[in-house]
Length: 260
Ligand SMILES: O=C(O)CCC(=O)C(=O)O
View 1 (cartoon, rainbow, N blue to C red):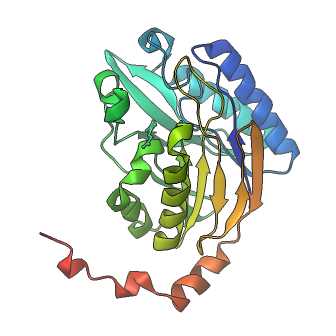
View 2 (tube, helix red, strand yellow):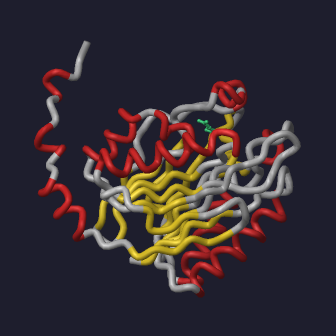
């Protein structure tokens, strides 16, 4: 399966421009042969303008219809990064996963909100893991800051995920953390990690780009720089079993001791 990670400069607060940008990038990824396309965090608004409550999608209606249309048009699965998504008076940082038939097969609201950026004062957190199946492979997604919580990522691995998607809007100044955390999560969980960051700027933040696709051994299959790009990598899930046999951390872990 060929995966495309879309690293885009999301326009700050310009929703119309951002849907057009996503459409253009999905088209390019499909033309490059991708079977699964991954977008970055809050690709409809960027992270996050003051009027985000007004700019947010309502009940995910527009985003789901848009992703379903694009998925069917190009015959690709889409892990729809995340969007600002208003449900009633609450705002969520929501991921929709759509299969190539245009069916929404999974929905995830970011669980760990980025308190240093005040995200918890604006958004409501989700309360469940996002594990889903495409082409017979179990997959999972989290969102940005969630990557700092190794126990949350481990849950996805224990639920059987063989690949983890990490849409993000991660600042350039903590680029080192981004690279190390994503690579470490791939190594410790022995699964693919597809980490898709934004690039470009808001009024105050420069996003770090550096999207990456790491295999279950931690080898970087593709890595972005500071600018817009679409990373492509072929993933082969048969290597996971071989790696897990060589160093069998799932057999050797000691959950009986993992409590205080
Ligand atoms: O953890 C970090 O350093 C960045 C997290 C973040 O920006 C986010 O979750 O949106």
